[in-house]
Length: 293
Image (cartoon, one colour):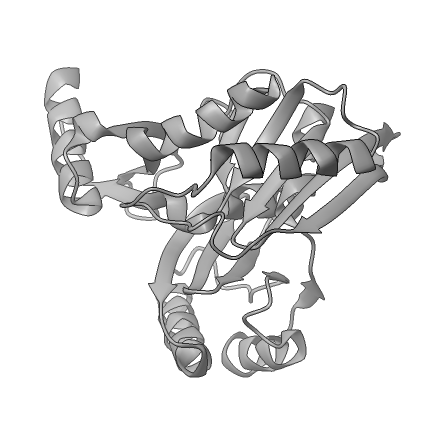
């Protein structure tokens, strides 16, 4: 998955940006595994990054660039120029598009995809930077596509920031894709769940054999998170029960962010889907593992 969506070179250094927080990591490979070579985090003023798909994200480029330069220096990475970057989840929108079997031309297929993207994103396509990856067909033989979009104006803000620092950001992706690397690497087969919380709500992705099956980005108040998670998991359970080709239970679970009590999230998943493994790892390190090929 994502072989075409991602840029062909993957540095082992990565930057993660969130509202009020930035982090940098450098990984080194040891055999088939990896270890953390350098890492640092810094708290940022809450208003400095305001994650949004619609609006401006960065309040003061000069202040943010200075903070990131100091952060990189504290981790011994000041001379590093090539980075992968995980942007705040709210900067991007992600869709999984399903198309009925068709016998038309490639141009007709493209027209259907553009129509679905226009409806799904609710923004003129010429205002977006869009990446897409064709996924495996579903159990009914329908074509599926993973599509990620960021507004060009928002992306330009971050590109200007990296230019000020003299950094080449060859891989710029929303947070959940970085985090998902911990679930989809190393040849794992089966169903797994990423639960990534933010101040605005949470993003949940169910993977089947390393490809996304269900994607939901849910905005809700903190006291509504558990109810929304229950609804999502019940939908997944019903869909799994209807799929005669794949009846095994959810077997891996990764929860990140501070929006969920991890033990409580584990209880909810167990109540609705059965047993699983529980873990939590940050997004930038997930992107850095891509340097291992």
